[in-house]
Amino acid sequence: MATSSKIFITRENGAVFSAPGLSWASARKVSEVLQHDMENHIYLNNIEFHGASPEPIQLQYEREAKRQRAAFPRDETVIQSFYNKKEFMKHMYQEEQYSNFLAFFQREIDEKGVTKVLNEYLFGGDELAESLLSRMVAGIVHPIMHLGSGAEFQQPAIIAQAIAQASVHKDYLGDGFFQPATKVSASDSERSMNLLGIMEAMRADSKVDGILKRAGAEVSKHCSQWTVPEDQIQEKLVEMINTTIYWTATAQNPRKQLKLDFYFIHAVNLSIFFKAFTDFPYLSASNKSRLLEMKGRMDLLIWASRKMPEPQPDDILNYPIHLGWPEVFVNSYLHPSDDGHLAKFVRTVAFAEELCRPYESSRNLKNLPVMGICGSKSEI
Image 1 (cartoon, rainbow, N blue to C red):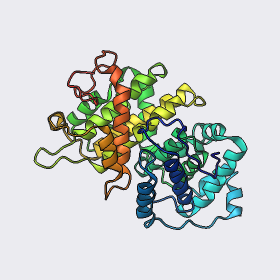
Image 2: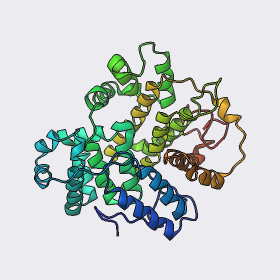
Image 3: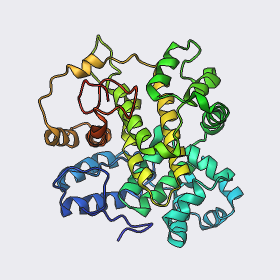
Image 4: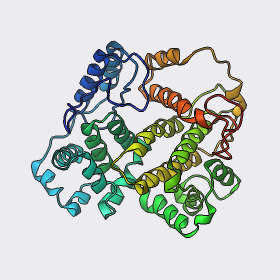
């Protein structure tokens, strides 16, 4: 049984998407390496959950584990001080406190359960919760990806790791990006736009360069136009994941070999976990809406930070397809130099194909990319 300190993956963990043929041996191996990973510092860990047999799982983990750092020792006095939220905040953005934050959230989950911990520490609305929620998307969105893994595979220990990880990241997006965007959105709710329309407007705005320090007001203003009404969460989820994969896949230099931008990959890899978040029975519709708004706005910020590349859809639409999904899965998790990013990217795109297919010929989602992620050239 999975607990706040024990990882236990099974074939029946209710994953958002998984390749067929996952064995009990593979599930045990994933549990084993993730349990071992918990003994290390939070940085430089990256494990893929699906498809592979035990041997490549162990091989990939051992390759990455060589770069991991030993965990800092725990300090019981400091851990106890975290029950005072003001004291908690004094220790944030101090990586040496990660082990203490992890112990604290493991105990909180043991006492209160995952539901109450998430609703208190991420959605409680107080200063600490607002700061932690913002820090969740720091570090190229790694804390919230960790949270998504814990949510999708029903692992309280990984959820504890995620919140502890957010606690030691810098909050550089709250005051400078999310709060201004929220204020503009609230004062001008009539200007809501779809993601592609916002991207086109940002490309046309000479003041936008994607750097918050130089164009913070302009970037926040544009990003504020992505809103998620509570009665449109499913439709906005589809729009977000379709658009994210579209601008990631089409961000190509016409004069160079087809490649994927490292930062854009993270926006895609995070997307799949929003299916798990929106399916949470213990998150309110308003909090689901808020999370999805944050995701779309963060996507726009990541895209803008890479100089807003003009989409090159022909490079993708005309690319010869030789392999099916089973072969692609195998090639991704056996890739000799991949550290997990590629395998996660492939899983997300395969999931997105399923998610978006019902909308492929529908007019329910207007003005989405003409290249649907299912490979269709028709408007979805």
